[in-house]
Image (cartoon, rainbow, N blue to C red; front, side):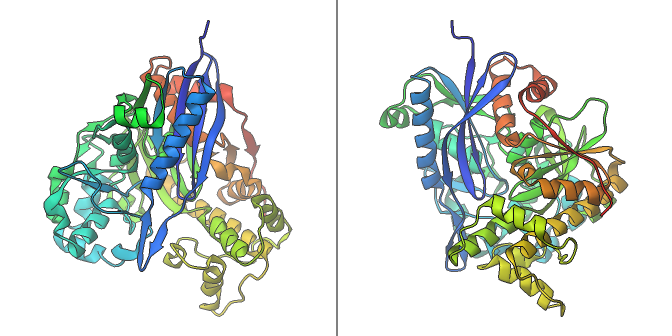
Length: 478
């Protein structure tokens, strides 16, 4: 008799997407990647966009492969993605314009204009969101400023996971964790702050009803299902649509230990889990953000540069004929002199450069310093600089919400053992690394909650502990 439960998790990030089939046997969760694909923002002139319709085609392929693998057995589907970006839907139900990437420079320098309409301290007091140039509120302000007529015809605003769920089911809703990245969501009341949108000149009628992780959205839209040759019995579930919230749901915090986390991927997100938002002037000064997590928790963190720096260096080297694997880059970093090249990884020049090694080199040259030259020097420079930034951010967080004893590092960056060790050194904290597939596992846990086979966040994390191995790094003098 079949007792296992099957769920399909789609995780779409800045550099790629994957469809992972999760099987829960009542004790632990096993994973099988059935489809993967590359993705990155597309530049058109001065603009950067996402190819969301190509992504939808990849999602369709993943659904077909999962159904084939399960021989037509029913399963649920959950989609998590990056935050802040959005699609606009018109009265006919069509996507109106291409989806801008958060790396689009259209928002540069606009916060000062926005602050003339809404004071900075009011925005933070209401939303608890850090000020970074790609927040949805600022993107919408830039959009309205450039093309105000768009909002005369837009009916609904959908964040990326909401948009893909709409393409699959025909149902519109805004999942709460992804909505909370927008800077017009109130984490204290767990509801929209529509007046902030209106003050920015954007109609709040675009907002859809909010739904929580673990909510069934609906079955596949019949036309899509039949055109794809998929069987009945496939339903879409709202998971923690923001990949950070999904990753945190699968972070195996030890009970009774005050812990922080670093979700380490294209971006680094360093923070901790709170029961209520921290909206103090000091928190605003430190530029920490309050977003929603699974189980009505607040994901309190700072967004820091991440492995985008390594990814883009690798792309530049590959374009110039040196196709290095991440393992080769990592080994080269091990061999380079430690601490020699430290730079600010959050400098805006690193947001979307044509050539990342040249951009990093320019940071040093602008200061009259010698830049890195070899692959190892660049990679070690990135790792050292990220770890140093983590140390600073952790101390800022502890000054605001209290001291932590341990750091859980989750996500693909846990494979970079050197960076994990450097993080322990820079923070003076024990680092527990794993799971690598935290985002996918958190996505799956939300689906299992919707199915009623896992009862809440704590039980879900118990499943994660039984399903993966953690690696421990103790701080060393360096």
